[in-house]
Length: 635
Image 1 (cartoon, helix red, strand yellow):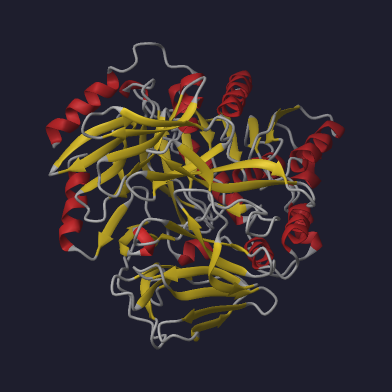
Image 2: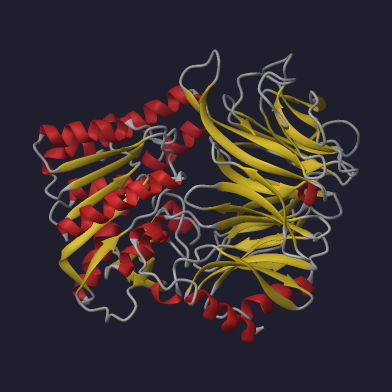
């Protein structure tokens, strides 16, 4: 396998002989979203180009395409096989719902029958279910005969009841209620026969999280906890179908660990999967929620499974790809075939198929970016002013000594998220232009334990912002960064941090880029209450993260960059999607007005039909071209 890796890397480096431009980095991956059929004979994937966006299905034995569906008019979200002949396409579209205020991102699942050449939406608003729903793309299981998908939705007749529906896969039929739910139902769990054996509920007004078991034939409460928002995660069923998988913080390490909850008596196990230095980030599960193991957090992913042979197999694949970040994408139920995604060590991303002890190439994500233009990403850490260690990533321009370089600091979104070693198209482009790219995992970031995460509560614009300032000052002191040539670029919470940097440390940055960023925290919270209602757990979550639950208008005013526009010195570029439903465009519009009122240098780019994640290729390209021009002008 190591010899094969060398061939793959050489092949990658030879793909493009043309100069690599901002357009190459900004382009969407040419191949992505791979999935295997249950028998392992077919593979589905998304393929994009300048004039086409489509899902394809290929025969693995011949490599020939046997099906294709154009998805240029929607936002593709994923693909999975329902049986060997029918696969589901997941997509969303920003649209209006008749009778409801505003625009909504409406997600849906579509069943594509390869043999019959048909395509139909599995759940559609008003067709057997309540008409005012936006999230209709969740498939939690498939019947043993492969004829039905099980999907949660609000009922047509009792619109307040969130129930599990049985939906015909091969043809369009009105769904039928498979298991009645309640107004506070949030999830259902199935056995191998497609029978509901448990359901999860959360009552927003009572702040009550409940899990009920139906293993004995009647509903029995096996878990109950009062909390302002969800502090336990239930996701999947153990192979014996006698337990649910529960993610919770380990009492000693304060790391997220894997436990089981008995469906018989509610007993919680000792930690089954836990790691002293990493959180359990997610469950690795297959059909109908069967759990095989876990994925741990970290700058590079790692896995642990129940089956020792599977542990050895995944470790062997990673060993054959040294220096690369390797993620499991999909697999057959016997794990004889596994699709993995690998990036790093000179690769801009490639999808590989493991089969019979060997690895073969399925496709490159970005064939127009050769090895020499993939820049090194290295872990780095420093101490903040209060002594806390802040893990970070540095993307270093190939061929340059890290001495007195111009720099781009890129705070991530979330803020309870974190960056990984891999191909970040924006960071890679900046490094390709000769900038050192800094990605601090400031306090409040996930993946580094509860203490690191909780240290960010109530610290928006304060210690979380200090961590970014300290990163720049630390690297300047070490001689790695030219302190007179530093720009801050961020999206979502990172956009807030960029604006906060401009307002609260006006002498630190020579330019500022906020993409879909928050400028007014008070307005953000008011919008969340309007969207969800004051009693909703989402509102409680944000109040806890931003202000430790103690909302004070003066505090929100103090940490909102919009109220400090007069202090801004650096030129500011605001980029915002017109249809961003996560952070409304009004956040950037009002910041633009506040900066113009103070006669500051500010540019505002509105992305037509743009969403929060720059998912449209046209918008990502426009944003990157504008950012490239702006930064080159100012540093």
